[in-house]
Image 1 (cartoon, rainbow, N blue to C red):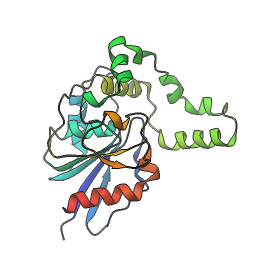
Image 2: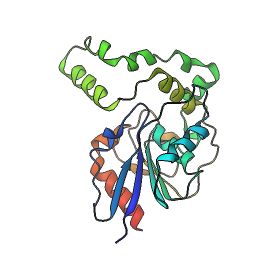
Image 3: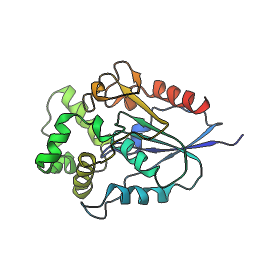
Image 4: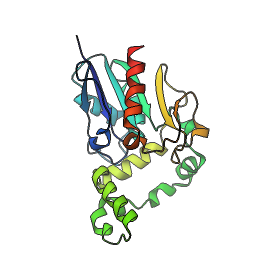
Length: 219
């Protein structure tokens, strides 16, 4: 049996670790986890970056899966290579699905005030977290938000807010949680909904997401 190659792109500032709870049959699927590259500059276009990301794709007729900002990235990547299917999780299909606060940040340039230094120097700030829940959250952030270059963070935030895709791509599969507070479900159309799923449901509902992906690849 010829295996289906699935390439995964993580969310903003995240590494491949976010996919650790997914489960796929090793007889049917071969999984490939892409890492974020260093932007050529804060002003590098998302299209040019996506084209460079496709350099890591070494198979044909693949499946692309992206989470959050990674969902935007796989849509851009699919414009340069042949894909069997594109699947996005906890993401948006067009700039029209971005919440109003994102669009306001774009026009007011408020995103330039985002404290990227806090993320890039996370360990320096983590020692100020007190209480079990905050310390646990700090450990989670340290593990999963592993891409902390200031250039990358500024580039990625700028890229999300300035993304200019007006219409969803054809045959795109969208999996979205009903409790996503980053991209609220009320702004999302035509998605496979996961009840109670949050923006980080890739970590908490991995088995369910895996089953949804497999069912859409076998139909």
